[in-house]
Each structure stands twice: as structure tokens, then as C-alpha cells.
Image (tube, rainbow, N blue to C red):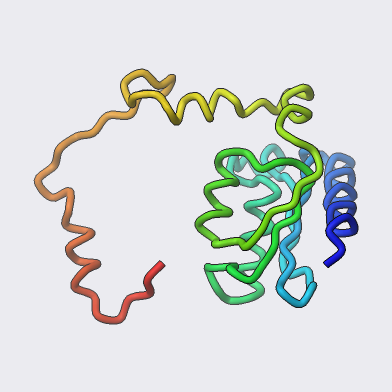
Length: 156
């Protein structure tokens, strides 16, 4: 695969997106045969969706096009190093490899700094900027018990 060519495509997607009132990020998912199966651009502000990052958009489109929730034979190309949310989506999608052009330091220099999220992840729940509180309900395990009973379930 021509990694540089795919990365140039993500950069052009990002620039095109800026000109359409979107964020400066673009991503594509490529299957094992070199076909682009998902394209994404950052649409956070234009859709009022904080999860509409380019990588997530590309993963969603690839999953839709391939009719699957796992992209284990696919590669993600993105104009910038993925943020923590996108990193999680990449792992859940089982992407095989990721190639990126700009790193998180370049993004941070332009106001897209995710370092605080990486720091928050390592804090105790009570010490986080947004506190997390566990409430011990007797029924807390019911969804998992019901899931375990299902004979025809799709494991993931």
C-alpha cells in the first residue's frame, strides 16, 4: 500500500473540510485490497456532535459499507494522531494498523490539546475534573446476567 498517498488524501480531506466550516482533520479506512471503504472528516461543530471526529466518522462509514463492526483487516490513515476517544474507537473496531501525518504536539500548538484527557484517565475517579461516582445498586449485574443467558448473541 502507498501509505504516503493515503495520508495525502487525508490532508486534502482536512483542508476541504476547513473550507466547509469543519475541523482540520480527515481520515480514511482502507481494506486489505487497498480499497477506501470509509472516509471521515471532523464534523464536531457543524453537527453539534462531540464524537464526530474524522476517525470515528471513517470507522462508522467503513463498518456500514462492509456490514460489520470489526475492521480487523483494515488500516486507518488520518491527518493527525488520534485523540483518546478515537484511540478507543480504533481498538474497539480492531483496526490492524494506523498511519498518521501530524502528531499530537502539532495539534496542541494549534489549540487541539488532548493532554488533559490522558492525565484524567490516570486519576482516581474522585480526583477527576468531572467526578465519577459508583452507586451500588442491587440490580447492577442484571444486564450482564441477561446477556449470558442469550444463546444466539454476537460476541465482540
